[in-house]
Image (cartoon, rainbow, N blue to C red):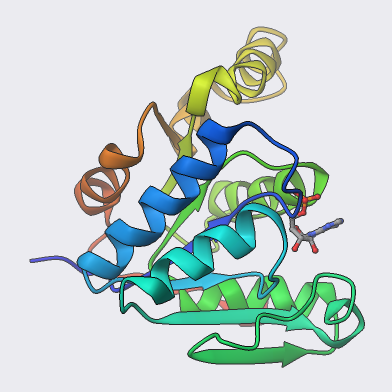
Length: 194
Ligand code: AMP
């Protein structure tokens, strides 16, 4: 029995990354659709975000895009989404994406992806939610992140047990089994505290 009905994916808005990253976004999209898991994402048509959403839709899956009004033009709001939620700020976008999702997946991306990743990891560190977070390390892309966190632990700025706030996997095929294995009994985000 799985409680993973919707998954939020954070990933890059650039399309200039490696072909293997594009393939990973396509494979994840197809797998989500096949397993009837709704994609929650940043609502743009650009970069890995667009490739991922197109792959879900092409395979008959459902997609909710969440985009702030001021970014709709820059990131080209994905008009084919099953549902497009327009928010009035970046903060309400991230909060809405988190509320709608049963788990979080991080593909390669840039500073926006890092911002979203650290926000959801630190909300978990603070006990604001207990939803699983899976980082997908395609071709070693996120290895420097792992090294940074190991260094933060070694220098006593991060508690060693907080290393398990997120899980790193090496392939798209491991994503859904890992989310399912890690799902908490009940999940919620306490919006009052955010
Ligand atoms: P990037 O990884 O920089 O290509 O951005 C991926 C997504 O993260 C885009 O939809 C950005 O709008 C979004 N994003 C979220 N928070 C931020 C932030 N603080 N700064 C920039 N982009 C952000």
